[in-house]
Image 1 (cartoon, one colour):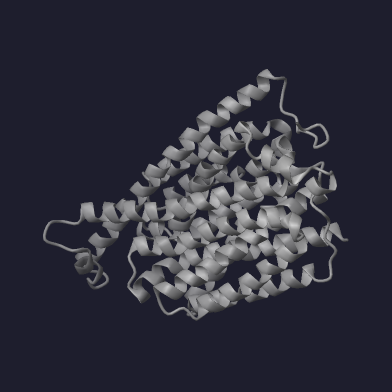
Image 2: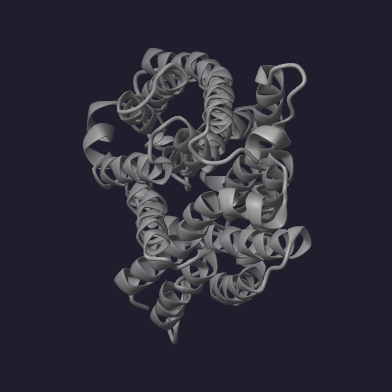
Length: 424
């Protein structure tokens, strides 16, 4: 067994997962025009990536122990190949929906296997290592976003862009090839399956599941809509997304530095406050100021996902692969609902700003450069930014919960990881 090779292969698999988010986010506007889809329909297509992810996580988590991590990884590899192929061949709503669902299932299996794999490989450094692994989610979005921007300006459409995902997919398959995989930490320590399920029913663990619903919605919901919304507001939306995710990648790479200065709950509190401020600022910004607001948002969401997983792995080790799967699945399930909800709010905002006697179709069909076309862009921008501002309520709720959690640990003498051998 080569831990470094397994870790690097896991990172490559996460790059593929993240690239699918970036390329889909950029392709959404094109799909709408090419296949005559509403924003709500686009939201439902994108939502399949998230509830499919959830389904794969919930089923894949327990199967990591029953089937082994290796089999789960190869199922993910097959799902990625199938998802890429079907998306490239898509001809409308149904095939886009199915291809995106396959991506969601494959992405969920990657995370279902790789999170417990890394926690097992590095039992004394879980939160830091999980942050380093999850560097490659924003890192993959940066790679995918830059490819989409460059290829799009070079005349290569979204089908070519999705086809390029075959390269990192084959690369991670090769890195995993012929490698021996360890048993999960829970199995290796002799914790029974019954004990694992009981640990997943503890009130504090369930509280963290509830928080994961909100952290994921705060991070990934806006992320999927930002390219479309900010482009209408006069900013290069895909480059803003690249900027946000690039900052997240840098932050996660140095997560250990931040964790030396504050506890995991403290870091989560910090993130909740800044993500709320960033979303609110974006909803009241335009032009270059959107980059400044996006920077605040990036700082806020930077540590959400991996620190939530690290906190659960450290405080509830008996939940094992199932606990991490429930957390990831809950997060993606949340986003599967928030995406069409944001699309609905967006559509309502547009409808409420269209003058009487005018329809959205009339404005959308106006010649480029005309006053009606400019009015249409302004209406879309205002409605989209308002949508981002309304989502800022979610991290505000999290700030209260994480603040109380950080205070609880401080009153108990400080934050300390729980040893699996001593866990109740």
